Image (cartoon, rainbow over all chains, first blue to last red; front, side):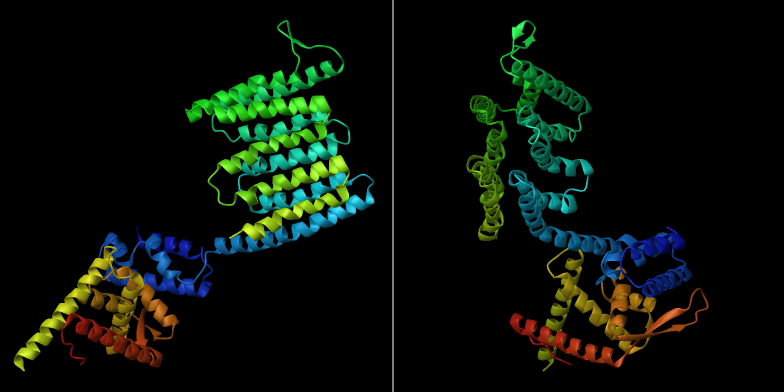
Length: 329
Length: 138
């Protein structure tokens, strides 16, 4: 390393910190003087670097008491986003009341304003890669589309397929291109076939596949579900009968309840059993805090749907912060 | 009296060697904390400059002659103590290359040296007493 290379590297590293320009120039002048002093003693460049220390090794000593500029910027960004997240419950509450009181019958949809709270946290402080952010946001996006667009159009069924964007976006995070292609194709094909067969059944026609009558349109998604299960089994190397049984039971229960009692608008709540079961099975110490959003949403939907308590039932969402305060460390 | 003097010298050398040995161990990531070692080196730097104003190279050379110390750390210590007003600096023109920066002890530096030296001597006395020897605080 030559003198200029040494000083340039040191200059570059020092400029990453919030050190006044005058002090940086002073330090560089001192190191230049030291280098020339050792040079006059006929030392080689390597020996001089050993004496002075490599720039990467001495930078921590030289910058003691100073902060990295990137850390200062990140800290300022974090402060701003934390303030915004802290305000979102109040913003959500305001939107909920304004929409509920001003638009007739809107209480059933106005609760979606509370999704602003977790969504703002994911957007401002969630994972940096866009795809990961989108994966985290996908359940909320699906819920908003389901309630705001499909619900008013009375497309509860087959509108529930919108929730399949959750695994659909999740698949894109996989590194295996071939697997991504197969799964996305099976999912898209399955959804299209499901909607087509559902329409046929609604019209009183019986769809067929290879000459066999299909009683339930859900069979269209069987190839996708089978691939996911088999892939999961191969990855786990253990047959987890409990999880497979739970999933199949839930799907069967959802279809049965929805078709028998025409509860498409509400029966999707059964699928909350999946994340709740995952949380309860995990080693997390904050299980109650983690499952409270699901409990609150279920209570809200049930009381709103069956008793038309949309205007008051939003109070159950207060269980989320209250539980976090009581149970939090 | 001769035997007392010899014993004192012996214990002084034992302690001095042990402390120096501990400083060496520290460089290999040993027992003593980095902060403690930094404090000792700072004291040595203050003492060297108190004898007469010196350039950074002169301080580094004198330190490394007597103590097995990481020379990379000397300049940052000089800089830090200058910012703490222990030293004042002036440039001295040099025949070769850029002018040399000379460090001289300020009144604040002299006070700091005096108090640190006392702390160090008290420490040595306590350690020696614990080890069952005798330390002459001259």
